[in-house]
Length: 80
Length: 556
Image 1: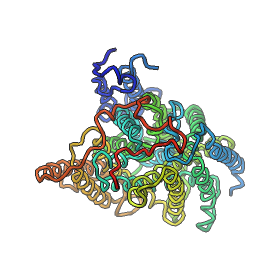
Image 2 (image 1 turned 90 degrees about the horizontal axis):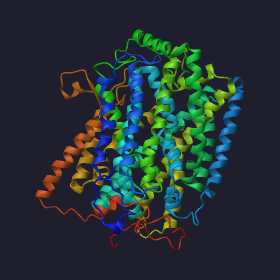
Image 3 (image 1 turned 90 degrees about the vertical axis):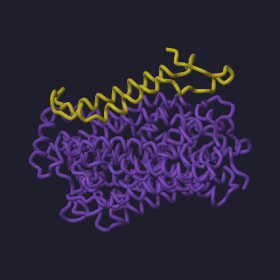
Image 4 (image 1 turned 60 degrees about the vertical axis):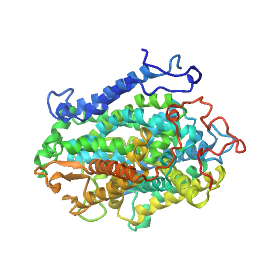
């Protein structure tokens, strides 16, 4: 889980690295929920929910999973 | 009339008084040595950890108006109202990417508002003033709308009167209490109250989504009831799915609202109050829990259809107040005491964002108008004092809007607010990444986006309410001469024009060699985190030790 890092030792504790390439993953939960072709249909229903509703609610999990993953991949080494 | 709702009123009043007491006590919570500093009053000492930030930002973004208006939209239009879900999914990765940089540069330089940042980044008091005014104007109607949320609840409980003053008295009292404890405790008050608000909201929603579908014959029949209602209505654009015409509107509205939401001063206030970058990033994974709740709340609109709810009559004869859909649903389906809890959740849900918004607007006034133009050498204590008084003025203004103007006017202004706050995107959000844009060009782009946005909103009629202007945010593309029936969100078009104008004027000004000013920030500032020796507040709490936080102040 080593993202490319280039920093001077002196500032290691106070410098965050938000130029990691992993950040590009965050565009997945920005783009995917905005494509209506995926969710704009009734079938299949899950627990009575048309696809329009359950799939968009499921995108919340996609968002959570992606931000959590990126946070874990980019947080400081030896972090809290 | 109100006697039928006595249990509800008592439960509501008790919970309301409980949080009011908490608001006053909050001044002593995590008490600073000296409250007379804007960092303390307006940003809670910039010290909030993960949990507090989660409740604060959650309470901030998901307002009482959202809880009332989103299901009302679902009730009236169906699937189009569900845009709130993708909207609140898309925003978190954006914040994760962008606002972390704003947090860093703000902590190093002691910025309190987005306009502070723009002032320093582009060396332009004019641009900063425009950003500040845009923020204040966009926030004011948002505060007024929180009152619409409370009013829907009071109306359902039968607490209403014939004259304008009698009808609004409960709201005036509620806001007077709110104003008093915000004045005293600053951002600590909403942060503490947010715990109660969210606990109530989560309980109510969990009960509602488990209990109501059982009573109404299951989720499948709820959706079927909604489908049947929309099939019977003459409006071609409602239904439980989107049609070919409103898909573009749905997507652009979700994206545009997400971009607007994190440019609103009150969300930036919540983010800047957190302790470090880690807190922000972890919160972006945790805050979507609220999106799930919001999605379920939206579906209350369909449950209301299945339960055969009839909204209460509106202010003028012959109209209905669709905002009462959810309160009426609770009144019909829940036992009285639990309906009281649900109403308290909505009422308290209005207080948290109203407090944060008034603080954010007050900070903008203090930092970017008072200090910039009225009193250059204001001390931190004077700044805090001006902010406290401004927060009172802002709330009086919000109450006046509701009492003296048609609430519809606030809803129109809120609609406009989302479009105009988007016009700060190039300066604030892109400014965090690049200084390529010329300060003059950003002003030109802002003006172009503003003008176009206003014109487009003015052109949109609302057939349902028979109004010819400001009828919504869905602009028919055929008005631009395209041969289509599709509609698009006004804000997205306006901000794209803003960007194009800003880019073209930048090239022109650069060719003409117009001075660009000096960047007051360094690339390194955008990555600074807690523990950086140059990150200003938090350690120096005493008034005597507090350094003047604005770093690159020109000698004036």
